[in-house]
Image (cartoon, rainbow over all chains, first blue to last red; front, side, top):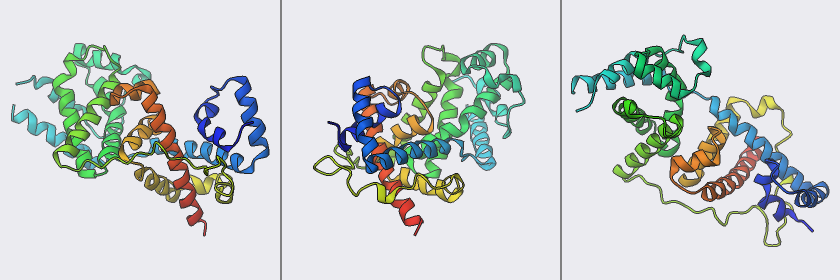
Length: 79
Length: 223
């Protein structure tokens, strides 16, 4: 019989639908009856949604680009 | 001594804006590199710059956690690109090669400055108790049903950044490549020079740690 530990230990495969049928059935039977595991799965999935959004953040300012260009120009003049 | 011709072309490609080459947005990196080398197509290189300048800086910042160091790594990586681009023959995926150069330059900088973190292992990190249950540990801090407007706000994104920063370095870099950059286990393995099982393990432990930290932060935030 599956328990919370099994949900946690198999969460990556569970999210990515890589579990075999029997294991999946067992885990879903447990999570269906366990509010803690339901919250764990929900927050885990939500975390992945949110961290994926970090990809859209831009850090390189026009000033950094300008300094990059100036640096590379200085390398041309020294070679 | 190295060929400065490529460097001059690269400099003229760093214009600070988005590439005008609408049609090149779906062109594979390797094709753009080929156009740049064989046809002197500066627009192709401009597209490469626009695709990767943030990714290079972002990975460097994730490893070094210092803006000045990340900027110097960015400069080092473009210099390496200028020196070696004509030797790139497509044996490896261009993006993997570029990420690897960036990670190496970042680690070299940390070593040179003796800033290398003492890596804390999360291999035994689990959210459940000794009996293997989550009883009383998750549901009371469930933040998943909060509205998108709150969770995707700038304040929430800053909280997430702070939580990612708390990951030990070897987990943080794997998390960055897999979950922020969206690379595969195999690509992350090639970039960092560690096995796929090690990538999977670090990703799993890192995510468990991060989910817990986010729960703590979001719980505090709601008070």
